Image (cartoon, rainbow, N blue to C red; front, side, top):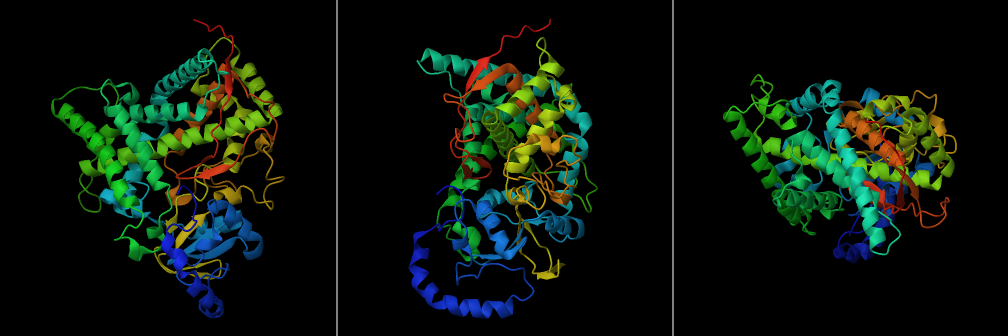
Length: 517
């Protein structure tokens, strides 16, 4: 079963008769025991509020807000869960209680190989996590390092253009219309880019099947991680693993770990041989880390380095392709917005040179398109769940320790109290606005906020804008049918990220451009 929180195993249905008999009693007793908890729908015995959520939990939670307010309390199986669904509530959380809610809720699938203990995204809040965060934010993903890798990103996006043109030609040669699926090629580009940034390897072009095996394994890891798991709702079932999600994750994650471990071993041997390097990549920085040996370890183990590299592939490849696909789909549904974006590119870029990353700051409308896309289609709509580290007073509620916390960025971006015509795609709302996604504007949180804000935000900013601008500048995109608001199916599919249920397919017509020498 893909996406959402529908009943994951058949045996739950057998308990419905008992549940119906006990529901009235549960409703009555829950009132007295939850006086200081946020409001929420009555919980059923055993399963709690699982039946209140369907395959699109971010949408179901959004629909519960008019009745229960912007702070919602749920019992998902045996897991206490709080949901934040307004800018004001998010501001209280991140400004006043960020530290208290800085732990992570870890999906059972991500405990395979103890992956959660070594990764950045799922590691418990503490000294080790702070080390990884510091390496990323002050050593690797800092502007100085990002500027040094500009040419690499531009080359990867150039290759994306070649792939799109080749696939369109192959479609026409095969009797088709020339349609391509941009998101698939965007994912391949992003995957290759991460490989070059992390490992200085062009993984999809290696002659051995190693790179392709790794690509396949990472894809499977993403599928496993995005699949709802009954063991996450009922921790007592973790040792049974009733859906075999963790067992399957052990296999696929194990394949990815083994391949990256071989890359790490190769690099260690190269370093011991004294081989000189012109530029250092992320793997070099992890291997060269030296701590004080007291609060911080003296070094990061090769096992944990492997976990971090795998995590970067999972996180970095998926989110970029998702965002650019949604942006392109919205522009195809809005010819006026498409025209404005293209006019801006013509004015700033002209028709005699390629787009460079340095052009992004000169393209305010393109930036507004990306912001509007992220408002309506945040890649991770509920962000990565947090977990309370202690009993906490929050907005006059008493939130128990170990409470799972969802911040519904999708709902906050559609809040009519904050946004005018929130369901409408209108990039103009961001022109002249100081609102950005760096975590300080709580009405707009596609990357989160506080200590656990997405570490790759600045890199994503560059790659998404460069990719989208290049696709719009290099091709005139068309659909087989006339583009209208009703033409494209914009139904969502929930997994590790929020994708289109039906992948975008469009016809790229290469523009006649004569480049300067």
